[in-house]
Image 1: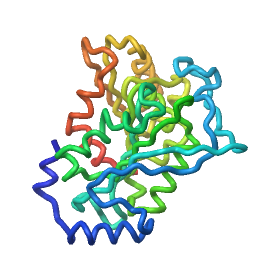
Image 2: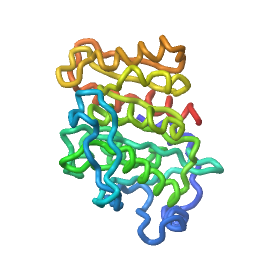
Image 3: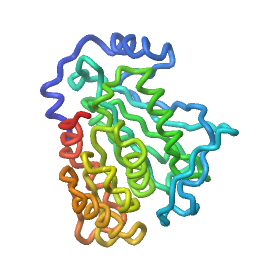
Length: 271
C-alpha cells in the first residue's frame, strides 16, 4: 500500500542510530523504530463520554475527574523510514478504536493503523502512530487524549503541524469530539461511522475533514455523518469530503484503512 514511499525513502543510518535519536526524547523507554509497543500514562479518570451517558445521544462532553487517576494504555509505533521526516520531525497519526475493543489493548490492533504497522506496510509507514486503549467502562475522554498527545509530542520528534486524527465508530465520535474541542491541534481528521451535534459545525469550517460511512449501518445511523457534512457545507465549509459506501453496514473501516489515498491525503495537509 505504501510502497511508493519506500521507493523514495532516504535512510539516515541504521535502526540503532534511529533508536538513539528517539531515545534522546524518552530515554531507554523509547521503542525500537519499526516495532509497535504497549505503553501507559497516568491520567485523570475518565467519566462518561456524553452527559447523557450514552454515545448515541449527542449531549455535551464531561471533563475527566481530577480527583482520581487511572492508567491509559496506548500502542506506540515509531517509523524506521525517515523519508517523511522534515526539520520539525515526523507526522503523527492518532487512532481511536471502537466500543468493541474497550478494555482490551490487544484488540486495538485488530483494525486500522495499529494493524497495518505490524504488516509489511510497517516498513515504510511514515507516521509516528499512537493508538490508545479506552478503559473498559468508559468512552473517549478529550482530556486524557490531549494529555497523551502532549506527552508524545514532548517525548519524540513530532512535527506539530502534521498531527492527524482518525477513528471508527466510538472512535469516529471521538474524532469529531476532538475537532470540536481542540480542532486547532490537528492538520486533518477522518471520522469513520461516527457522529456529532450538527450545531457544532461552525467550529469546523476551516478543518480538513474526510468522512466515511456505510449507508446501511445498523449500529451508528448513516444520517449522523450526513447531517454533519451538510451542516458544515451549509455553514460555508469547503474543506470537507464525504465517502458513502452503498450497501455497507457498520464496517466501513476495512475498506477505508486499506486505501492508500487516505494516508496520502493526510500527508498533503499541514496545520
